[in-house]
Image 1 (cartoon, chains in turn blue, orange):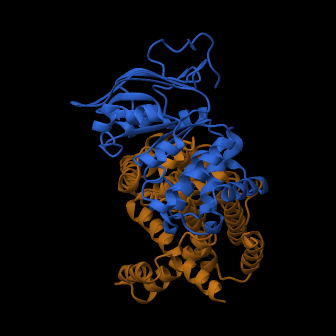
Image 2 (cartoon, rainbow over the protein chains, first blue to last red):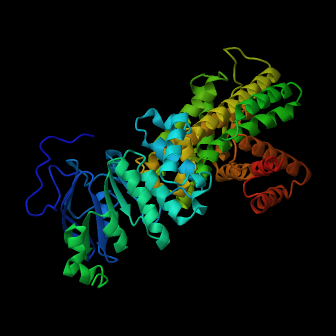
Image 3 (cartoon, one colour):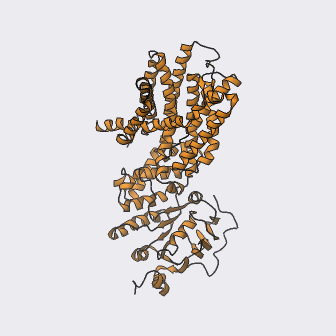
Length: 271
Length: 313
């Protein structure tokens, strides 16, 4: 990898979000995705700076997950560009993008359900080792086991170490999914609804664990969230989606107080 | 920490027992053992694929490639060395497997099974139509030589048996090691969730390709050993019933250990031999009933019964 010189222009004026200084980690320009007649994303412009914590909100079908799918290579845009540290991501496959340092967790945790929690992490770490020969080194090496044990305790899921991922509580599976996404020293992380399916009283605890772990790594975080209390508490910047477009982008309070956001996204809850 | 791994020790013990048994077994049993260990080698390759949730229903393709490679090498190239021939068989199958793998890696489940079946039947059709290869009759394979010299039939058979035992133990050990590596441990991960594998930065198709080539190489070597043991090759080596038997053995064995395919293959050979001898008209039905019983009562294969017993102890 490595950024090509000359491709990292300054953030284009006017469109850049508040708080973006210097060269952004992620720069999305005029991103558009059409599924037949449906516009899933239209002219999305967004820049995200290093170590920002951005929350994406929007009603169902607003294009939040589509946005994450486009950036991580799961879906291919109809038009537009996505630059990560200056490198164009459009046209790359999810595995290429992962290798560049972009991690992703899923709304429905994508874990290896028949494997134990620890083995899930071991495999994530094993695959994180690049190089041709790496695939044929013993998976459960002392170093790798130690690294996984550390992650298990950081994410407070060590009690479930030997249980199959299919049978652990949803919150544990969510945390495991996120821990796996960080295995490759990802510097930009997309978390798709990290608290969905978790009991209300546990949501804050889960987010505390995740955000502390990611802050420790100085990761840039973009998370999709429906729960406005979570958004207010963890997202310093909020991007509101509506019908495939960005409705508002800015500091959490400003966006959440925006009349159009209240009408289309949050309802009248904050009135 | 996981329990200590005794597979290497157990393999060494089994190896010594098998070699020793070679001196006492009657000739028919030695032949049976060679063929059945060879089938175990093929099933070992299938085991790796099974663990990823893939069933190749055309492994007979590579088995036959190994056999015909031996036949052609001894007749046309005058290569009759007992040790060299299985390597030639494995190499031929590896090359073909590597090439076909580019297509196979794109398919899963029933499509993977049917495509592999298709390739094997294509080869079968080709063999049947090729007059120079003896068409449906096949042809005889010359007795292999050892380091350039021709030995008595008995000595040749004993050495071939020993070679097969060495090969079986060797590949079992290699596959056991492979299953502990990152690539090997991906098996269940691929079965569970390819999306996550992709999002961990690895191409699932590549891992499946590697497994496919591994399976091809093992089947090729086994086909070569079988051709030398039987002394004759014909297109039924590539026929779908041969693939079916190999899948049968893999289901019968279970995928819990690299020992399983060999245990399963020996059991299969014994059932087949005795069923043929005592109930020639319904021997296939006996096999069918045996398979049904395994699927109903021991879905994890014979090996799972041994494991359950050990867990209880």
